[in-house]
Length: 273
Image 1 (cartoon, one colour):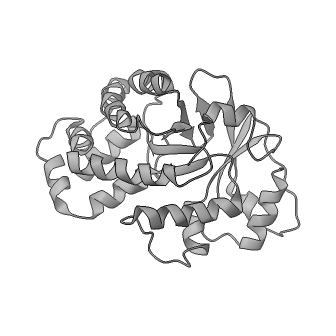
Image 2 (tube, one colour; image 1 turned 90 degrees about the vertical axis):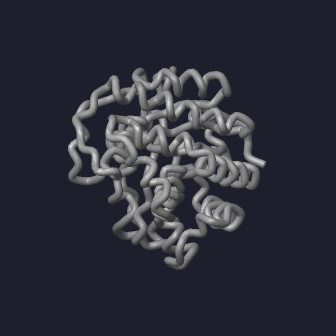
């Protein structure tokens, strides 16, 4: 069963013993190395838990990310019925609201997360798209293109907050809102954590840490702690090299899918602990 440490606790006192907490996003790398490029077993929660847990046992991130944004993408790719329902009305936010109100989808997501959390020993952080990014992506999926603003993001956060309540029984470390946009996409307005008060209220109630992930770092709600990105180049080059790490309260990095395992393990050891 996973630890009840919050992400804020992890940042203050890394479980690995590192001088600074390190949160690694290694999903694509793990698929390449641990699954040997095979399809990720999204439909088998225990097999998925074993897969990502095996990678965590080797890479030792101070908190383990469960990418529910990827799980939702798999749900939407699995059949047209839900996408058709999402496209039934053209108003802003209808697609996202329909997706997150779908009882079957929610049941599958909660069951998947429950199995995962109960089989891990590391603090688990659920990663979902930020309400602004999720709103933009679902509207685009159903063919609606419109200029969005902070008010739209605030409305969308209410739908996401309702989803979060479904995880009330789980000892989560936190919720990470991924605000990174696809390469080449105009992010439009900048929406900060202060626009997501409905989600902040839920996470505070359950004792989870809320954080926002962007290309240039991670901000943490109700905290001055700032996470800085480990650049992709950290995971390449000669295994024996010791690249400089950026200053910050904690580190967050995504290991590229094509990184060389020998170099990755050398770089992980250089992170401390």
